[in-house]
Image (tube, rainbow, N blue to C red):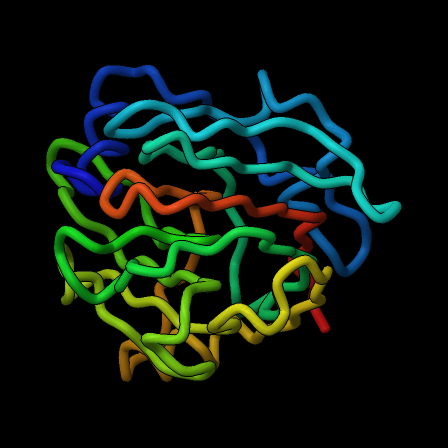
Length: 226
């Protein structure tokens, strides 16, 4: 990411009152829908960033509805406010796919931290009196990291950690299904229990640092009770 970090950008948006306040999404029984790709992006998601704009659009590929992200020497993402308790909905499930991945990126290094595909969960809302909030992300990146590695943000090492779920090019062009326990992953990444609530989700694909081509797809995302 270029210049100001994601947390700082979102903090400024909230301070200016530009972010759209939304409910957690459709809740039915034991699940909450966090991303329904068939819903219009405008009005549900807010687009913010630091440099140029990653192109986010609605598509259907391989019979799966998705939000497509294409880097344009850009650093921007889609975010929405929500509120749910990981203790009640600990399981996060989604599908995603990456077709082009930045060869030179390294999410651990300032000036190289471009993300192929990333889902950020913010445990709080950035504001003028709260600069950083604990943030856990799931990422698809190149083979500079291994599947299962945990990486601290070079900008906010104390509050933002990423877990690598996919690494390298072997599975490019394939739809993959993920299922993660948010509570267990937070403990693993930070060594403590998570805060009570997740209050924002961010989809992020960028290539402003490396300029390497990147193309990713985000399918439906659901938080489940079990």
